[in-house]
Image 1 (cartoon, rainbow, N blue to C red):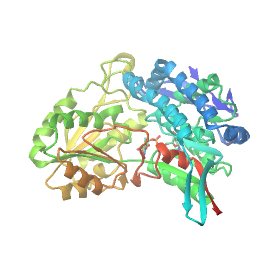
Image 2 (cartoon, rainbow, N blue to C red):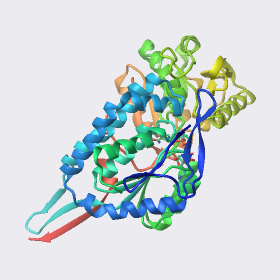
Image 3 (cartoon, protein in one colour):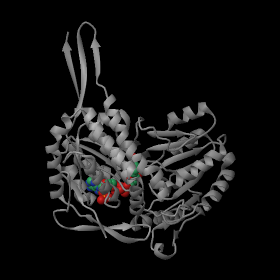
Image 4 (spheres, rainbow, N blue to C red):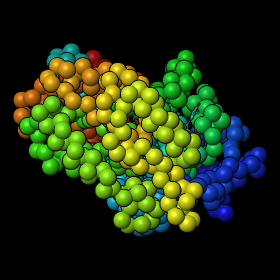
Length: 480
Ligand code: NDP
């Protein structure tokens, strides 16, 4: 049994209660470790440590903070294989994906914000002959960072890195479903010489640990990524306390294929954007809209490609899809496939749980599933499934596809496939999504604003947006 510990005030410590939760290996459906079942007392200790560390950390120069963060990034790279194995085991994702995407992105997050903060300049505005204004941005205090299970270390560091770079100290909670790489990160922070109390990681359940962080008056800033319902509960607690709040929430992203697209690229990348990480990426395109003249050709080629995807153990290099994250999540996804059938959908590919052989027979594997014949307003096409399930819908005009694409309560990301540049611009500007990809998917420049409209969130992460969020702005006006 692998037992992980909290990271509080620079030390790896047991939860005060002495209680632990089970940690599952989704590829085998068995418990393989224990996670601290922390509570309010552990959170309070972490907040006190972060408050104590704040004056010294925030007073360091950007260059000094940057140097320490660059050491953490180097250690993540040096431990790439260990971290990728841990991520794959904890989450069920293919090892090759963790090795290629999740872990390299975690070190990039540290490096990006460690270097970015050095160039994060203040502004000044001259009122000619009258006055000069200058604007300062200073660290806020203790930042509360709460992250989900789908891209565990990737999204955890996406919050922690800008918070620390800007001079805040942090109390963070990874998802209790996938806490392992956050624990390994705490070991690396100790090795890198991060001063005690600057980053504190408290493991445990959302409604206990997460809620205690959000409720605490000594945490003036909350950065949360997760489901829309959880985001709503967090906002209800944080808003009356006037905390700074960043919410990255759910999505139901449209993937729009026009008849003039580069067919082969649209097809190949649409398979990825549907099923990467078992469809458990907030940016996956779960509703594919195909212009009528190529509907049948695209549908048939898509289904053929999907049927060739291999579902297998995460460590097997030939697996395209691993396990979904938990039994509960697998059951949720299966219930949506049942709902789709009840709503009149036709299953063109997949639709079932997969039982692998031997030690993997209890793992949580699902077939990549393709459904057609559903109304765009039905629940299957409106609610976030967050698994390897996509729907196909034909369309006849731009106006029609925009109505369908914009019909959900979400507005996170969208993809457009067309060779017509004018149309690409026109449609991009009419889509109610925070992130739009044209003829590509998940091409990320960390300087760009990241986040969604409508119920997909509040605020933006990435680049200067993140550093602005993690600082308090003050304008000083001096009469000349
Ligand atoms: P949840 O909302 O269930 O959980 C997210 C985090 O919040 C977890 O650490 C969870 O802890 C914690 N939490 C739960 N309840 C509370 C509470 N009352 N107070 C404070 N914290 C709490 O999301 P999932 O982990 O299931 O992640 C999947 C969701 O995340 C999907 O909706 C997906 O779209 C969204 N997502 C959004 C992204 C974006 O950038 N917009 C990116 C990636 C995912 P615990 O795990 O212990 O319950």
